[in-house]
Amino acid sequence: MNPLLRLLGIIVLCASASAWAGGHAYITNQGSDSVSVVDVTNHKVIATIGVGKAPVGVAVSARLGRVFVSNVEDQSLSVIDSNTQRVISTIAIKGAPVGVALSADHSQVFVANWFDDQVLRFDSASLQPLGSLSVGKAPAGMIASPDGQWLYVANRDSNDVAVISTKDWNISARVPVGAHPFGLTLRRDGKQLYSVNVYDNSLTIIDTASLQTSSVKVGEHPYCVALSPDQRRLFVTNTQGDNVTVIDVASRQVLTSIDVGGYPEGISASDQHIFVANWFDDTVTVIDPDTLTVISTIRTGKQSRAFGQFIDPSLP
Picture 1 (spheres, rainbow, N blue to C red):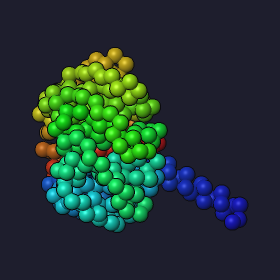
Picture 2: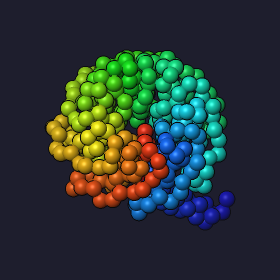
Picture 3: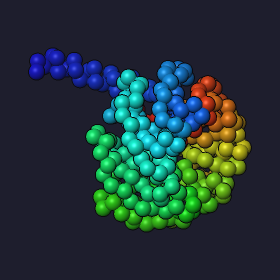
Picture 4: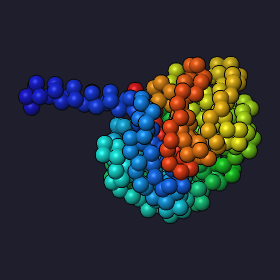
């Protein structure tokens, strides 16, 4: 290849990555069988994508140019091309697919099968099944460690988090947490895992090396959790409080609560802001993580859930 053409190609690729770093949020709308694509810089919906019936879970990969969406009533996984904003494939999944997560290198997609108490895994390129593993009861939220060694799964009806070895594909440990764990997130360095416990109104902090735990009380009926871009603060959605609890990571103290829309569920961070999906209001609330104020409200589809990392966490 001509060296100049190769250089131009690299520049184009970097520019594309930079544009993507601005980012899109993919909001699953369970009541309208769709996904709202939100520009996280301009805070506007730029596309609405029809998927399967009752979409819930979502995992975004800018690296692959793909978005994976679980459709719980359709028993399927929709695969969206994030360049064209269109569904390019649908995978049938017997049971009730809920949580979706990507491996650290984005080569595999994990799906939590709520009814069958299993985690399924697929090749993210070929979409071929790679196997399944029985975990606890009603697996929901999932997240992979940044070193690629572990997959963490919140087992809602077992009140624990399963630690799965991705190398051996077996359960290495099960960590007791609060009642009905649902959403999970992980510090960027992989040293602390956070589990939201719905019936306990608490957040469990897990040291991933020792598996020792501690907890912080949050609001009513919490659902999901996200870290601020600088990793200094945790944001927990409280569905029955219509607010978000903010926790200081270092001191583990509650700083404040922020009123958002009705019945907030999914939550993710871009490189600048926190985005919260509100089920009752069919909106997304945008929070400034430094001033802890609401700066925007975006109209999305019906019953917005966005369960999972609906903004690619590897960007920027």
